[in-house]
Image (cartoon, rainbow, N blue to C red; front, side, top):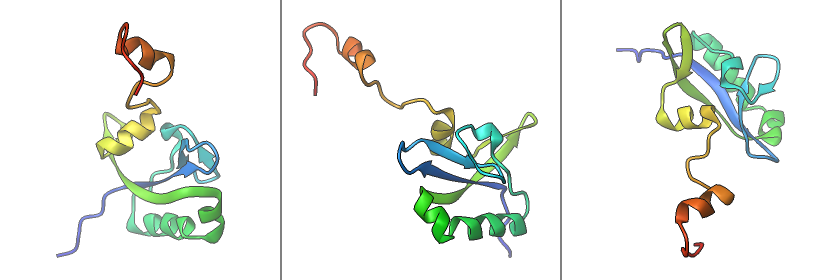
Length: 109
């Protein structure tokens, strides 16, 4: 039995800043909402071929395809990890916010 195809998007991280990036079909965007969704295996193969090019490998870090699901008329990442990346929110406190969470008299790690 053939494996069921799930829609995917091409993602990577920016080489210099490390910011999550999403392929739009014309370039990279830091907004998941701009991502071009491959809804067929053929479209996914085209995105994978693009991810495998030396230029793409040199311009970004870790380009890869990730599964997405459609919910309430909008696409969202299927995995929690990619949902966190797409939200562009840190998963832990850092900077002044981290200091305030430690409380008075607490030492930095």
